[in-house]
Image 1 (tube, helix red, strand yellow):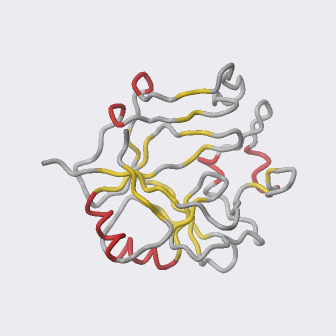
Image 2 (cartoon, rainbow, N blue to C red):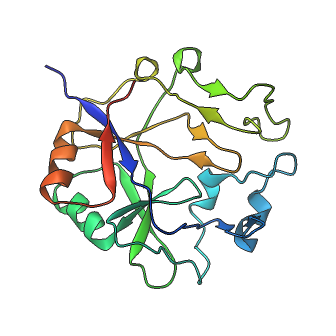
Length: 199
């Protein structure tokens, strides 16, 4: 029987947390990422922003081990990072946040290709794709459906789909974990997460 895979879903947080943006109002892009902002739709290129040093005043306000930011990123606490590494779970790069390095943005090193024709993304009525960056101006929701991407044979890997959901401002990074990784995270009682079977 093949391994079951799950979306790693962050729970809602008491505080809003931003890395690339100022919360506002109004919400504005931090100076470090202005050069990555699309002049047409205003979204930033998170695939490059994630590798720039975070600004010194950025701090993740949470007691959870895994936190979803309002930028659409996922952050692991020092404990979650240690649990992942000590159990031989691969597929993530850990990028320190702020000055105290209590949290790390995670970035997948293994991507699974998504067949957009079967991904099932839904767009808001009347939404258009940006002429500058090619992304939907408002958002892409629901997908990617499980039928549109393969999963790896290696159950010790965390992977991500190559096509993301999007909101008005940001992409939303979603990670896929195996039954094995789910069991490790539950055994170690990592907080702030739920597991959802892909549709």
